[in-house]
Image (cartoon, rainbow, N blue to C red; front, side, top):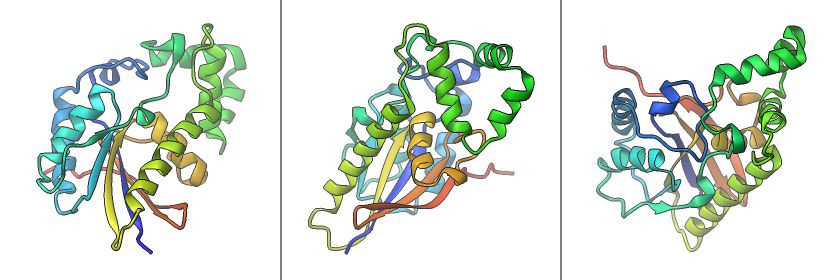
Length: 224
């Protein structure tokens, strides 16, 4: 039975990333640093023969996808899938990260805050924080975003595995929190404390309707 090798890529650094602001359904272009890092990642993946590519509908993911696929003439036009879009922060969109940290420390106290950040449940705690601080109640929940990304990736893998007589390599370009939610579900202990880096790639294999983590948060080395 064919195995679907899925390469999960987080987009390059954006202007809002550089400004230290929450960026979910809000969008901004890649910075010069983000473009260079995406080009570096593209070179790292140049020897991988991709059978298909999928991208979030948000501009930063599509910009990153174009940079990577420029080195892959074997690929047809990437498929845009709204299920891959980033976590929706609701009324917190565009808020400074520092403000979020300050509010949580003020409400919980420094000791409790540190314990939560260091706990194995830190990712679930992080999403709980966003929900508790969003007065509009528009922010997604952990269950909601995990279900959305899991359904999207399962749908992609089922489609690609239909009639497949050989293993396939699939490129998926999306976002930090939504990809972290997926990886947290299948292997919570492996998710980095600071989640996924810009232009990082994580690999999961899909076979017999199950996902298996192969590697996580790998970034291309800078040229010396």
